[in-house]
Image (cartoon, rainbow, N blue to C red; front, side, top):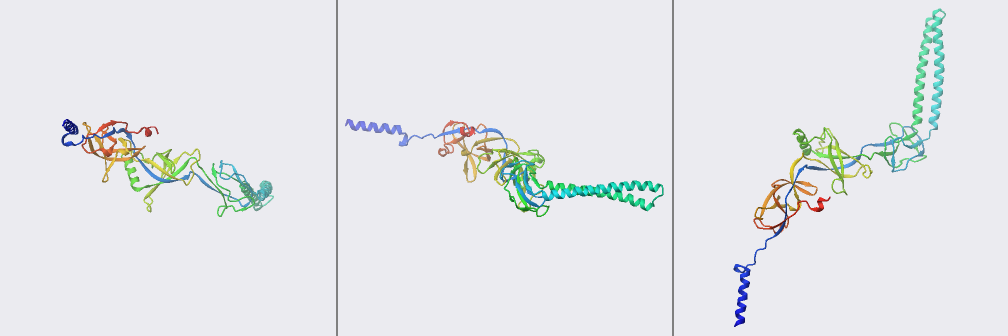
Length: 381
């Protein structure tokens, strides 16, 4: 009888601890909260592009002849003025010597004609020769002087052709391979000349992009309203990354915008220039480029993981003064250094739930633990 009474007492105590009706006590979810980061922000618009050389020269021969020497190492850096190819100069040396002889002959004839013209003037004064003979000698002297100038021009042209037998680099840059090797005949001139090699300048390097018509109209409207300078009038900052790079490690400027929209694509061509001192970037690489898409404004940043999606609309959970969760719709901007820009819907003093979102219900009380909005790992980058 005593054991039955004791068991009944214990059962009654358990029921009292469980609460009315025997239901277990409510568990308050634990969450982590942080306040948004208030900053002066600037939006960026991203485009894709290709790297191109600032200068590219196809090396052709100006004169014809046989290659006697290739003076560069293929695929290396060359400087402007470096000797690249040598064409057999002997035929052109002979032409120079012949032109020199022709010039000497023309000068001798001109001197003789000058003496005769001088004598003709004196003889005419004494009426020893006719007027016709005097004029003939004067005209002959003038013609011989013209012959001297023609011979001098022929000599200069011959010396130029002789100089062109040494083909030198017109720019500094990285050279390709030799398309023609020693012993081969090359054709010179302005048409049909043999391609010998190619040189591209690598520092700085260009990145060409195509901006869509909607973006172009936005930028021009911003320039009109004084929000941002247009690249048509001044250089604007640009940042670039290759396909294997994170972030935007390369910093440069947009230095050119074309003068018309391509009606076939609805885009306009623009160009950004970037330093390439280590020469690791080469023409043809695919790249991502971003440029300022807005002027500076006061904005808020939160963790992207704190944002929820509700049928296409974005929202966050915030805490009220009683530590109850409140559903808050927001308008998002782009990602900026791993943080999400919030355009509207939040205040700087709001406490946003960043961890423990799955246990939150609207109006339910939670137990908050404060932290920094920007994670420590991101802050150290």
